[in-house]
Image (cartoon, rainbow, N blue to C red; front, side):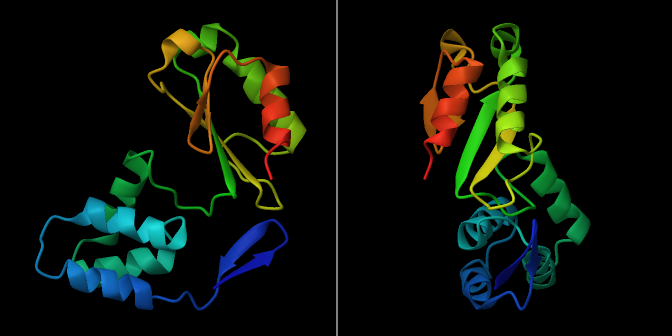
Amino acid sequence: MLVDQGNKVAEQELDLAPLDEMLDEFAEEHGALIPIMQRTQGIYGYLPQAALRRISERTGAPLSQLYGVATFYAQFSLKPKGRHTVDLCDGTACHVRGMPQIVTALENDLGVKAGDTTEDGRVTLQVVFCLGSCALAPVAVIDGQIVGRLSPQKAVQLVRKLD
């Protein structure tokens, strides 16, 4: 169970039963850390410390290896995410076409820095490097939908419409 404490979300008595069931499915498979971590994130929405400790115990993989995988791959998050995710591309094409100004506009409007989630848990704002849609630069992915040719004003409008 996750308990909201102002702008912090604390793990209290995280239900590991779904994780244990999933780990049972992988009991005979060696080297399946990435699929295990993907499914774990699917269960909890991120990779809680308690879940990573249980994966380490059950698979024998060192906790340091799990953190290495979690921090190497952009698909993984060690922090809870908001109900909506906004991934802002800062690859070369997007950068030169104004992404830094878009990032600043959204940070100011949401009251968070890129990489964080709003206090109300509504939006997680992230900067990523190259979404592969350079012709649409500057581009973002908002809740899985690619949005191109952004301006600071258009980005703020789109994010304000979420929820």
